[in-house]
Each structure stands twice: as structure tokens, then as C-alpha cells.
Image (cartoon, rainbow, N blue to C red; front, top):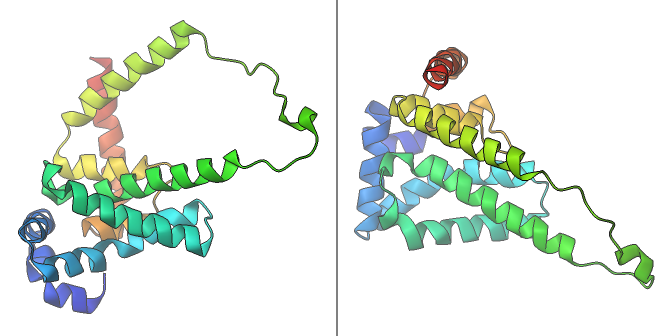
Length: 195
């Protein structure tokens, strides 16, 4: 976040969660400067996500534009408005995956044998069910963590991963606090999952 962005949004600097939520609320009500603040706050995060997918500049620009369009379309549906950063990161990641998948669909070849695929191994039903059950247990445990911890864990477990610098910038937390908070989260999650 730039110094000017902090000067323009003092509420975000004093209380990051309520500040971001207030900016989102103003954006919902049509405040153009609120949208500009959101773009200033989160453009770097979205570009970082696109860089992790090694998209071309044109594809990265398309993903960025689509991500902002998705926010505009769905901003009223975000329950916890202070979590707009993780929402944008997830949306950008999904758009990157969609772009990569579209690029993989195009196969130029004159040899039909290149297009033949052998049977790919599929996971057995039991392992799929166990994985789904584990995911449900972990999500339930995550929901019991404090909101700030959930935000940090969501960004730390993002695929592709988000750097500590981006997390610090997105959540407005000191970079040195991320590692210790991560350890506390993991210990607490372990306790909750074992119970």
C-alpha cells in the first residue's frame, strides 16, 4: 500500500478490518473514490496472483479486469466485507485457472496419435470420500479460529501461495507477526481436529 493510499483511507490504517469493510460498504453505495481505494489496496495482490501463474501480459490484464468485474457484480453478496482481499485473491486464482485451462484446450497437430490418451488413473471412491471428510473437518476447525487468523491461514494456504509481503500488505499486519500467528493457528487447528 502506498503512503498516499494510507492518507486517503485513515480508517483502514487504524482498524484494518472495519476500515476495509467501510470502504467496501461505500463502494456498494456507488462511491467512486471507495472503488479507487479498493483498486489501490488490492491491485498488487491480483497482479501477484497472475504472476504466479506465469500468464502473458495480455492474459494477466484480462484476469485482472475480470476479477474487478466479478467484485462489482458480487460485492453485495460478500458477507464479511473486511475479507474482500482474500475474496479477490481467490477470484483472481480461479480466473487464472480458467485462462490456463482455455489455453490447454487448443492442440494443433496433424497426427491423430498425439491426441490419444491412455486411461488415466482415477482415485478410488474411498480415498475421495476420506479426503472430502477431512476437508470438512478442517473447514469446521478453521471456522472456530479468530477472523484475523482465518484471513492469514486463507492466504497462507492459497494455491499458488501468497508471499508474506503480500499478506502483510493485504491484511495490514506486521510481516514479522505472520510466522508466529501461523504457528499458533496450526497448533490450535491440530487441537480442534484431534478432538
